[in-house]
Amino acid sequence: MGQRFRGWLLGWGWGWLVMLGLGLGHPPMALAAPPAPAQPPAALFELHCAGCHPNGSNIIRRGKSLQPKALKRHGVDSVAAIATLITQGKGLMSAYGDRLSPEEIQTLAAYVWARSQEHWQG
Ligand code: HEC
Image (tube, rainbow, N blue to C red; front, side, top):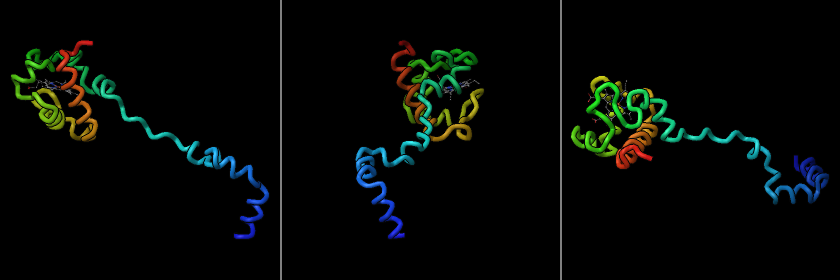
């Protein structure tokens, strides 16, 4: 191994080292597939929630919208409370605990809370 390696090194000479220095000598890193990007919160919401909550409304139970007043009235007025509701479901809304990861649920809860604070505008 040692001899073959030395011969190989000599064969490629300094060019190899220069390439390494430029970061081009590490193809496995460049070729590796990038990690799948986490879904942005808005896309998660569109996919899982907007069917019943378009624009923060509630097409099934109108009063139970995602507007700050409704959330407050129903005691769902924190990111943690929203995350719990998403995980466990409530009434006609099904539970998402077995469909979404805890991270996705946390992301959605934070998104719903932030959007509610701006009344789902903009
Ligand atoms: C099948 C329709 C449906 C889907 C899909 C749905 N919801 Fe709901 N959601 C409801 C209904 C119905 C209620 C009212 C539940 C109750 O209190 O009886 C509700 C209530 C809520 C509330 C509390 C609102 C309030 O004013 O009390 C939040 C927050 C909420 N949903 C967030 C979400 C999020 C986030 C998603 C996506 C992960 C989602 N929902 C998906 C139907 C749905």
